[in-house]
Length: 54
Image (cartoon, rainbow, N blue to C red; front, side, top):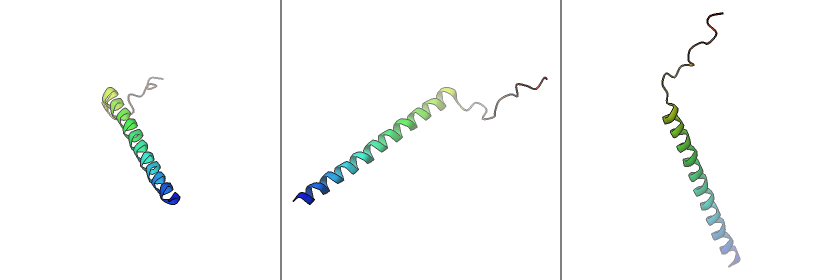
C-alpha cells in the first residue's frame, strides 16, 4: 500500500515538473517573440560602421 502511494506521488511530481517546465519554456519563448516584434529584424546586419572617418 505504501509503495503504491509513493508511486502515485512520484508520478504527480513528474507531471508537475513537466507542466512547469513547459509553462516556463512558453513564457520565455513569448518574451523572445515579443522582443523580435518590438525591435524587429530590420536589416540583420551589424549596422553601419561607426569609426569609418578617422
